[in-house]
Image (cartoon, rainbow, N blue to C red):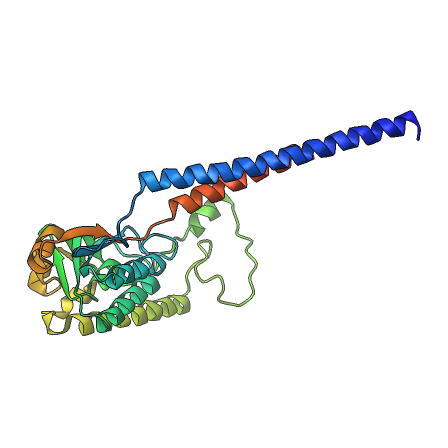
Amino acid sequence: MDNNELLNNLINSLLEDRRIERRNKLIFRVFSGILIIFFLYILLFPSDRFSTTYEHTGLVEINGVISSSSNASVEKIIPSIKDALDNESCIGVIIKINSPGGSATQSKIIHDEILKLRLNTKKPIYTVIEDMGTSGGYYIAASSEKIISNQSSIVGSIGVRIDSLNVKSLFDKLGIKSQSIASGEDKLILDPFRELSDEHRLHLEKLTSEIHNQFVSDIKKSRGNKIKTDKIFSGLFWTGIEAKKLGLVDELGSLYDVNKKYLQDSKIINYTRKENVLETIIQKTVSQILQNNYLNINH
């Protein structure tokens, strides 16, 4: 073995030792980081939801636009309500809504699942509309035993919409042409660079009408003879005062009024499931460390 080969072997051996050392340091840093984040999470975000043994009111919040990718989704809302109902010390649930609506599908599923939960529990489920409970937000509210809103809450907007911009004339003036390629003659029905044909418009109107009819049917089943007039299904919205006159809400009040009147003024515990902060932080931290380490090793 000549000197050059011996030197190369020595260098490779040292590089391998360094890689192993760096890998071990990486593993140590990752697990140390996870432990630190875990303990910080426990200290900063304590939860007594599941350890509570005294009687209390379960609170579930629905905030913002309802969609499968938000906290206002079936995946978050229904398990939250179940968590509260499954706790023997929870005497009832209040759903607090501040939502303009959103996904028709998510709203209907949440509505239907709450009705199923009510069939299998003796615990009452009330809804309080605060700032706004419209469209899909009201759809969900209608599934509860009672709907309570503030006098100035915005309630209603029972309707369905599909939005699409058409910029064809503007782009024609600018000399910009669309070159979308699609299979299926109707695939580009909502393409903003094409005029909406009469046939496509009729199709979309039929689609929204079908969804709206289902919406109306479910509201009528849930609210029954409380509904005073069919004009509430026009898509309009009202203040809480007018909504009560129309049968959209049962009472005027707040979360605290409901808790005091129907749930013995019990302590309120929030069961709302949200994005797992700890899991998100750990995933991002590990991903970043591994990425940085990978780049260092290969360079």
